[in-house]
Image (cartoon, rainbow, N blue to C red):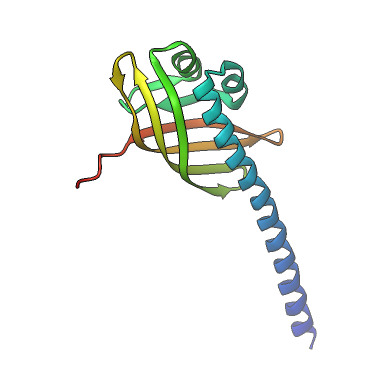
Length: 151
């Protein structure tokens, strides 16, 4: 009898904790989705102050060419470089959470150019965030062009 009451109490507590965890995750997921959209908007608008605030000091970006950029190199390249983003649309995004770490995979359609060279097309990306002092910060990102679909 005591065992079944204890077992029932444990199940109840785990259900409450599970709901609380999912509730937090849902709030975190909403925050991450908003950050992804705001980040893309900042890239298109060449908004250095948003990137400065979002990216950690040891942030790294792996570009479509495989080149690894530091935070400062990424901000400089995004805001003053030859690559210009005319539009960047999120087609899908999915986040997974591991405590105070989030790994986000996305697919998007980009309209961009570098001088006269068209860089538009479909891209996939992976962003890694950590929660620091209650705020999600980007620690790493990678962007890869998708091969054109065969017709």
